Length: 471
Image (cartoon, rainbow, N blue to C red; front, side):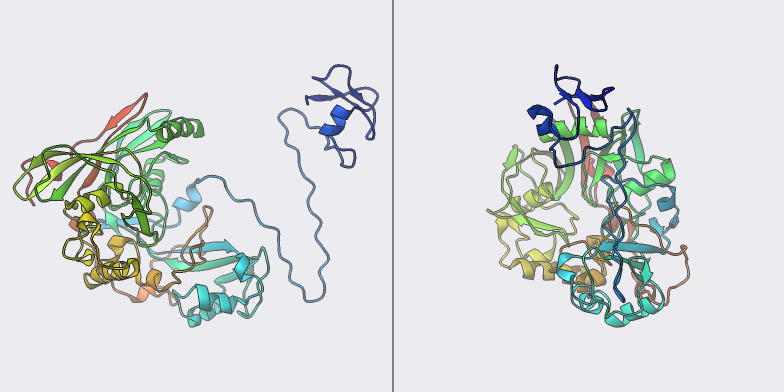
């Protein structure tokens, strides 16, 4: 009920409660007893600017043969990458592509509730099927599997609550376009860039160094940026970052209150209508892993306004004004209207059927659709365009939690030193993949303008959006 100050009698005085004094640990006024229950110890006061320090918990004496399980660590509340993260590996450029040299990396996770009482071998065999059990046995022999920071010598060990697992892997990242990230605006509050197509905004899936966040940190010394909004990996255009949490919160409030105006431009198949078209079909996520959505009555409300800018006899350039911010909203609505983006690697594929999903007509179950999409890209050796690999497809589809070898927490760190040499345990090192062409890494959808209450940021119109442009 107010600030308490020490008085000469050894008790405490309530700074905002006149006439109330507490002259002992027991008794005192009812108001103060409500603040400090008599059966609980009152924490020692701290000076201004100091933090109260909790006493370290005492370790329980372990019985013979019992394994010590440490208490869970506090997780970072935000994403922040520093010099140690950026130094994990390096880039090189080849054939119009930005590539990352393979490197060693630690995937880390705490024991899930459903793993408690099960052996590590059983968990690997049921939930981490991207690799055969022989791989995990070899990884344990090589000292790459750790349980509570101790090398795992026996995969039959039974897991306990709070067990901390660490798996060191040889990591490969898909290539992205070599097109540089252009900085449009930088001041004391924000950084605004023109994001190239094929680049994820932040680490996800198989991407870490080939992301906007890492490239800005490594090549432009722009660290600890706060993500205000995101663009799909294959979408290019205006992307904003805040330099402080306060700025991020202020702009995020504008986003939530729908005060942020977004304008996109795209090139679609066919002759788009000259009049304004409004699409309000709800959108449902089919698969987070592959990144596929579709129109469905059970989906979330969406609204997009479309206006044709030009038509060259084969394809149309269309301005898109999304009034909501659902995943793949523009792409799904255009597919539903029958005018998919010309080179959309998901929503303009044969897997959707002869009508390519027009009017929501698919005639396949979600499972059949996903399988057909994957098979179509697999036949073209273009799974990287979807941001997935064969190993991702082999892992358990039911395990949606953060997996030990396919998902990282925000403070993941490197294991051994980076190396360009082939790793004897790495499956990727034994596979030769076809590189995508720079053309394959461009999708004709571009965020042209973002406007808020106090700002407006624009990029140049992409070449493919010019009225006289031809394929």
